[in-house]
Length: 437
Image (cartoon, rainbow, N blue to C red):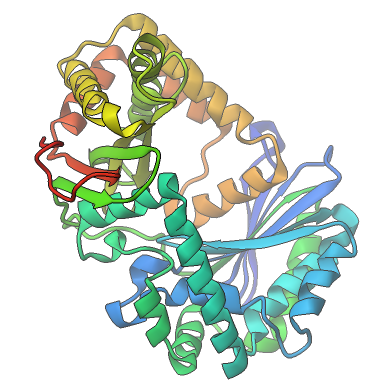
């Protein structure tokens, strides 16, 4: 490929315009123009996450995300943060299991600054030995802080239990031990091997013109990859063999006023066409105040303040589960009620009214979840990087409307029949007799 290739993914009538340009280096630039907005969200997505790391580099992707804010050939850490603060913008990043994202939200007139700063970080991070050592301590603090947030930490422990020693089962941040073992040379090597233009997607939403964004991005990246000629990386697909999962019970002792429980099992992979059925099922089981679990656990019995369902889908694996936080003495009863309700739903006990509420909840979530430029930026980036398609909002709503009661009952039977895993955290002995499945 020797020249840029531009195409229109969605017309204005379809909810766009959304345009896509592939540069000769394989770097992809996607924009969604929203003329009525005065803000712009600019993001650079890199197709690397924690699940790509070998064991000896556990935590390297997240470590690298931190280091890119520490300085470049042109800016130190203060200049990076101050540049966007000075125009009222905001900038941040996050690392997932299958991708990393750096983004900034600014006024439309300040887009050139956002492009320059973020792309400078992506292409020209210095990764000095001094920065590596100082940020190592910061990451240790982040790991410790996350461990103190028990309602969040238990989800990491559940993933570890469900997926075991596989990359999906490991924490995105790594452990204090793995972070302590990472050297500057290892992190810099990870940077050079993974941060390549063909493995990146630039995604922008707001009051923008596509041609202007492409020009700004080409200028920002040109000096670094002017001679590179490559095809974009393909959409991440899973292997034919799914990631193995493990069941059973694990109890983690924690001196706390509240007990935390996560009961879950294998879910759908990201490309599964039943994901819309799963979304409706989520609303029925534990996705809102009218859901089965909220009504049974909180409203009728007063057993817990917080109870909800959740799910995660990856290229070759997924999970579904229920979280509940309650007084320790109530934990066994909460677990019994959750198991009873899941068994009831798996047996087909779902009403037409529940189906309508589940579909309505999902419809509202889809539409209202796209009301800001950050959400639009994320949607078109994920469509390019991990889904391989960008359906219109009307198409999404049609797929939700097409879900039938039989669809939901069949999926519930399939999902909730899977080997369950239970993770418990609280002031309990670390044995499993109290919480046997």
